[in-house]
Length: 266
Image 1 (cartoon, rainbow, N blue to C red):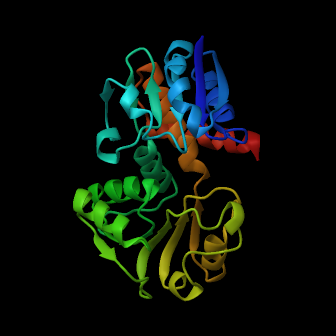
Image 2: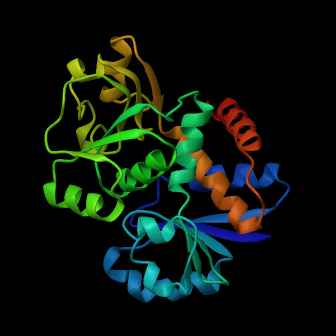
């Protein structure tokens, strides 16, 4: 039996155990999956315990970078992203499945980005991974970020996109919210105005609680297609489980599992 966990500052409301358990059961692998909430000031004293206790674990806010000094190797996208969300404990190997989950969410939602213009809002951790994957997929990406220093740092490191110091009001094929605006204490607020979203073909929000953010509501009312981030979270989990199992991921299998999960969990 695989012994797994999700680790973060407060993972009490995390859907990771439910998703990973569902996926692994369907793949015929028994597992236990725990939630481990750790105060930031206690992470250094708790980190080694994770490697002794679990076969693998997922890392979320705010420890995606903090876990790196405890690892022997970064694989896949993890070096480029400078962040880890999946760890194989025995090997002390860190991975990042954010980008894979993001692209598969778009693909399975019928959103093509190759040769398309994409406006991405936010250059934080999520935005950074999305920028890399979008440019690799052949999109023409423009990134708006209020923090000029952060935007400049991401541009100097990744390049391949157009940095924006001001939010434009012009047409884009796809608009993507990679900020946290629209959740928690900013529910009901959109990082982009109705006028901008009305000129975009598709609106994508990485937020999945609430299921329809204000960003998506404005786009829907303007007659645009909308996609929230619930599937991305599931696909990240799927890729992570494939890493734990040393199993080749399959896009069709992932989509079928997501559809079954959605049916059973509303």
